[in-house]
Length: 270
Image 1 (spheres, helix red, strand yellow):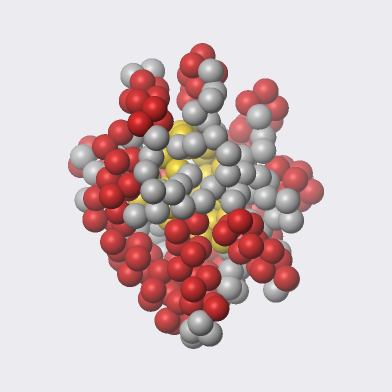
Image 2 (spheres, rainbow, N blue to C red):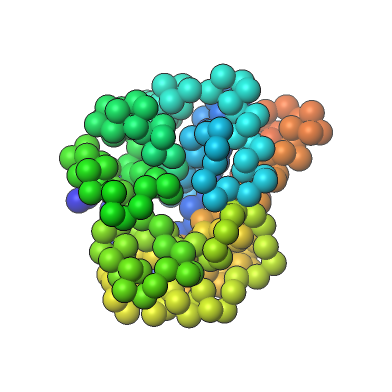
């Protein structure tokens, strides 16, 4: 499969670059600000971004992202509203690869085929469905692939070695390697055993491996990129949005604060 995500990761590999994948909660603090953040991140050099679909019962999300989901839902965020923001971003010339981090409950309620087609038509390039186990992922993966979307699988540090290989083989675009078992949240260092596991996995797959969960600063981005092909940062970014919201900052100020922080995280990937 070839789309923006696979193309960008292939270009990175050829150029010896690594990827930074910022995570944003779609609709937090509101949908127009989410759209503004997408454009600002691209302007700073981000090439791939994850958008989390707010859900009332988040999967593996720590308190920071859970709270952002709750606040977004309180404003009335919907799947169609998120699709509209992405559609406008594409209409304005946005070229980042975009991934939907979404619970299968949302996909199932919409109808998996309709969700995949709607995501593609809006301008998404891939799906990450954290609560869909490998044994039940075939249909969703086929529908995603049929719509031109990558279906990214997650691997935990506690996943048995043989199953890690199976998940990597089933993953399209990249493999999402969770740095710790448990929930998201800012941490001070990546476990050495995680970095070793990523290095081991890379001897069994040509699919890029990106590390997420707990990465909170440029030093940790560097560690993740030394071991794998990219770093995923979520809670630390949402934390900056929270600070702006609680301070009563204007949307433009929140966008600038997030963009500046992400610029610092980008440096090790270049």
